[in-house]
Image (cartoon, rainbow over all chains, first blue to last red; front, side, top):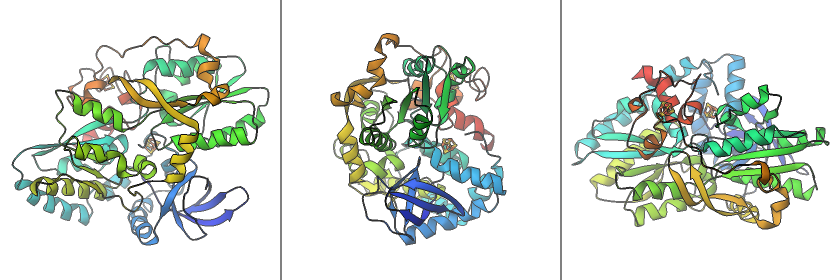
Length: 94
Length: 374
Ligand code: SF4
Ligand code: SF4
């Protein structure tokens, strides 16, 4: 499952530089250490193995979310969660 | 990971209207071409998009894909996997790594095999999870077996930073980070090279920026388009490449502009430079030794380097693949997985002979999984 679903920042723990993000309804945490721009709650980021890699502008993020929504809606709840988690877990994506 | 019973997903997404429209445009554009063009998608993620959504079936006859060396699991030579295997079997060691690495066979077995022999091998979703393991196992040495291209290097660097800042004294590193431009150069310098253009890896470029491909356009005269992972991205990028040929251009383009810039993520690059320098050599599975194509820890961090600390037990002789395995030719673009005599027979995802079959990003695995769509 090599997606690359944009995640929306819903909370920022400033002290630890960790964001809580929402990826199409699945909530998880990601380190903000590698992002070189300022990010705020409401921004979209691309996540890879537990880190936000960069910010994505809202318009682009929404456009790709539309595409993914179509796919994800077809899955069962568990599958969906698994797919979303795996998407960012992949070390292989070059 | 294993198939997620996502067949529905592929079906629903393989032929959206946009792809059809793009195909029509592509057909039109390809008719104007006066030669056949071979496009290398360097990255395994793209190989999967291409196979999964049947993009190769949509292509006009005069356009073909060559599957590149862009999967860190596929290109990891057996001797490095043996390192992980041997380290994991050391007393009081917990070996931590990411993803498919656990299944790839070295010459002594895979990490999974080591596990069944009693080794403590753990798979993490993020390098930072290693810290938790270290905290819960203070009496053990935790070795992070770091793999991946420029994409995952900064994540390892971030873990290094944590270890040093917080004076964690039981985490060590075995570094296997490799870089994309050097093997691309090797492929182009090869006499049998059939590559006319590249689709650039997306995640690598998020970190490095598209600038690392500049030389391929200016020195080698091969156009490069950095593409996203969606089928629409890939189709769009092929179209851009074909247009370039028709207009007699050779340019570096970013199709994946929603995530990639020319300069890339400078903070991540800085962090990499803080901890890593180029290793003189790295032997790529199938491609052989490529100078300056990998990273190693800087001397000042030698105290964290498991490769140095355990050097007495880590052999360095080169170990080649199974005689019948042609992964190297596949990654060089001179063969396709179904040219391999054992493809789908002696070599399947459940009993892989080569890592192009083990890794879910590998070309052989992609052909095996999605070949029924052809
Ligand atoms: S883990 Fe990575 S390589 Fe494997 S299927 Fe998921 S995204 Fe693809
Ligand atoms: S099918 Fe197996 S043996 Fe043949 S090239 Fe692929 S990985 Fe190697």
